[in-house]
Image (cartoon, rainbow, N blue to C red; front, side, top):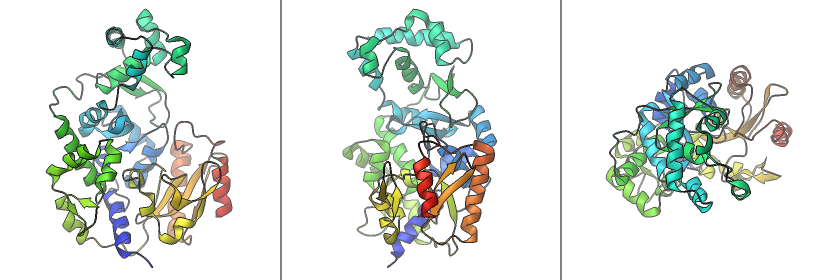
Length: 398
């Protein structure tokens, strides 16, 4: 039996996430303000998400990056997301509490805060001449950066330079600039950031957490506090305290899923579209990643369907994260896809009949990836070779 409440929830999530066409033609910064920060791990996720929501081509998105309307920054949980300009400060401040890992490792290797402070000063002095890549910075700072030897290599920290670069970026004093202007390839230069977006920001940790919660529930509510806790990286108590000033309300009595008060009537009056609304998005798109509750996107019968996981076929309902990019219809996961650069085509399978609208949606994404991106990697180490088993499995399933 179809769960009518879950069908409505999924369609409402898709609506809030802009996967129903309501954001067509909007700017990248506007889309990210409306639907949430786009997780970036050196893959095509941000491009795919912005195309799915607003039909933005890579050139337009890259122009937004160049104009600093959007930027890839360390933010929630210390993870890297693409953020809109209006939320640069919030994102950086949210990420600062989760930084310091490299510094702690360096301290165990005999590096002092004073030494890193001197290196940071040397980096900023070098960048006065303009953007530099890591090798150019290393040459410019000379002896201010040093090797951490074999012991450092074992701990994944070969020199002190990444410590200084990471700290300066988290503080908003420098930022990364994609070498070729693209955000799906991890090749960067660094440049000074003046004024820093966090300069003059006066938010207590409690206020910061509440502002993060406010945006989270605006992006993806109804959601549970546990889901917000995962996104934010906060503890149970801090998550509850962050949400308290928002006066969140349950989607219905006894339900753990919460909404901003102004969204309750919006949800109650929301009608599930009668016709399919297909959207192809990345495996780490906000529609699934923000709540990280894959089961809620699946019909009960689809949960037992086998898909190719890391090494073998596995029931999709047993997974925490998607193994391939997603095909959605009104928020329901109805299929998976991968791009095959060799044939310049999308390999895909669906849990539903392949009607004309679905085929059109696949064809549109295929043309976008072929013409604008060349590939649709899930993350930086993804490659046509590594995804070959998934591509073969999708073609076999289709």
